[in-house]
Image (cartoon, rainbow, N blue to C red; front, side, top):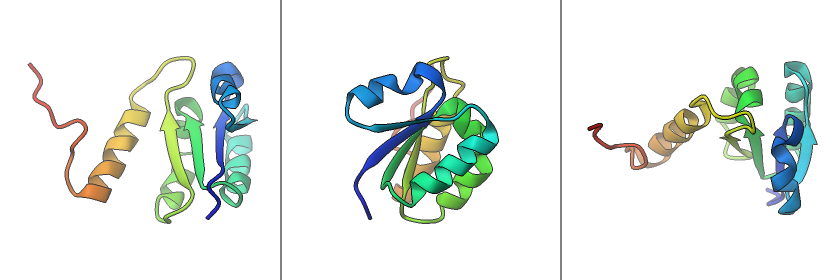
Length: 108
């Protein structure tokens, strides 16, 4: 699998990644995001997707989660986070390791 990285997001939230050498793609709605994600999955090994778009295409992300590649990682958007990215990271870590090592802490 190709080790190239891309980010799919809305607006300015992808600019920092682009400055770091990650190929940046923009989507403005659910259908455009799904179409781009399918296209990027054929070319990239790692795809970051902003939380706002990830929540819109969650059904497609679940399908990609059944395959080893591409690795699709939701990240907080420039507009803030709603917990989606953290919950997906937690799910994937539990699946890979069989235990919650990131968020297993007692609330005080």
